[in-house]
Amino acid sequence: QVQLVESGGGLVQAGGSLRLSCAASGRTFSNYVMGWFRQAPGKERVFVASISWTVGTRSYADSVKGRFAISRDNAKNTVYLQMNSLKPEDTAVYYCATRTRLSNEYDYWGQGTQVTVSS
Image (cartoon, rainbow, N blue to C red; front, top):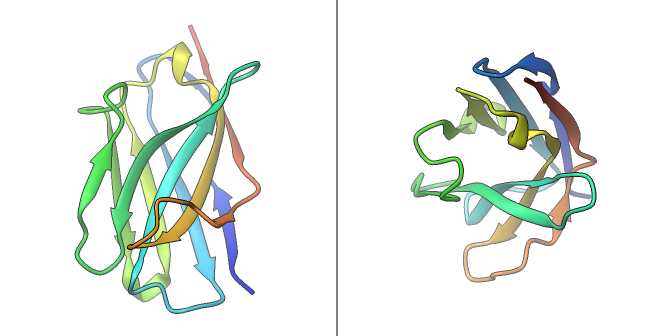
């Protein structure tokens, strides 16, 4: 059973930083992609960033490029999202998810962690 557990959310002032973690378990993730998504109140869930587990290829939404960085620790089966220069519009529930490299659909999701950025 695949499990993704996010942590690291919280309340931060605009301009501040947070690091989210996603601990993954339940399978070997070497041929998978890990992604971060977010959902603001009243809005759809949107893509934030992704990283391929083995090669480390990264992708970012335009809204976070230059401010957020995704990384992974293979030994700990953990993916991180370092968020810098946070803005109030980054306020959302952040979700970790996983998919195979050959699929466009993320099939496992974490429970989410709240990030609130005050102005």
